[in-house]
Structure formats: C-alpha cells, structure tokens
Image 1 (cartoon, rainbow, N blue to C red):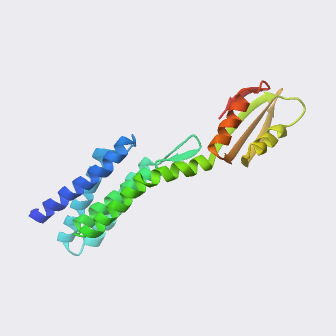
Image 2 (image 1 turned 30 degrees about the vertical axis):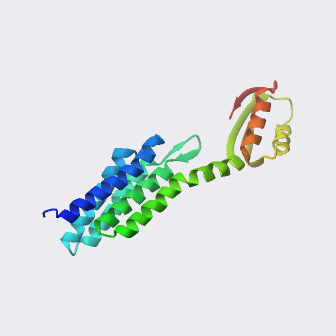
Image 3 (image 1 turned 180 degrees about the horizontal axis):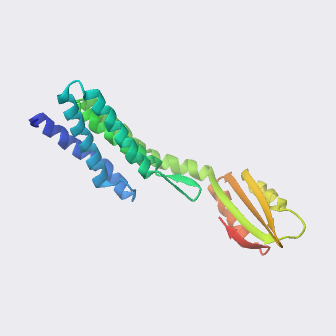
Length: 209
C-alpha cells in the first residue's frame, strides 16, 4: 500500500493537533506529554487509513485502536495519597486517538470542532475548576494526643465551628495515646484556618494533613 498525497496531509494534520495538545500537557508536566500525544494522534490516523484500505476488516482494526488506547490510558491512572491521579491525562489520550481516527477517515470538520472543544475544556475551564476547588475541598486530617479518658469529640465540634463537614471519621486508642482520623469537606480558607489552629495546639503530639 502506497501513501497518497491526501494521506500525507492527514498525517501532518494529526501531527499538528497532537503537538498542540501535547504542549499543553508538557507545560503542566503531565505523564503523557508532547511526543506521546503526537505518536498517539499520528498512529491512530495511520491505523485508520490502513483500515479503510483493507475493506472488510476496517471495523475490526478501528475497534482494536480503541482497545489499545484504553490500555495506554490505564497505565497513566494511578493512586496517590488517597486520591486518583491521571484521569484527565488518560481522557486526553482517548480524545487525541479519536481525533487521529477522525482525520484518518477524512472527517476534518468534526475532528477540528472536537479539537477546539477539547482545547477549551483544558484552557478556559481550568480557572473555573480552581474556583470550585477553593469553594469545596476534601482533605484528610490525622492527629495523635495523650489519652485523657475521653474521646476526641471536642475536635469534631471544632471542625463544625470552622464550617467543615465530616465525611468520615474514626478514633483509635493505643496504650496511653489516642489517634483520630477524619475526612473533611469545606472551603480552602476554612481548611487553612483549621490547619493553623491545629498546628498551634499544644495537646497534639502528631499532626498529619
């Protein structure tokens, strides 16, 4: 099979779109950066061109592209400090492959439209996401005190005074010490004010946040 002039154009367009998306990920120091997303875009385009030329096997090859991209995306997602990291980058890998497939199939308008929408989601919605996170964050707190024949309910009342919602809480006593762990939800400023108070609490022996 020989590549035609239009096929070369398709590969070049995929290269450019993958490069733009990759630069955004590279700028944010994400695991899938410039070279990775270029290769995904160009590879998806090439596989789609091949699948179109092979005729009856076109659907099977396209389906395998989606399966392969799912494998790459799964390798990007991991767990860190009780939270899942890499979901956005994995989704971008998935979208980049879809853009490459669309270009390979000659669907330029819908591919470019999807590229613009994805770009707006990454750039324009970032400040909105930060605003939401300032208004509502979930953080984990752990503190250890000397056991004084009472629980750490006073701290739970303190959390409520700072307008923080307790999503999960547990307390454990070991010898002469008692440890409390909580998952709290609230505004960023309220978390910071609580953290400052707890750091200056002389009754707390250990404090993780």
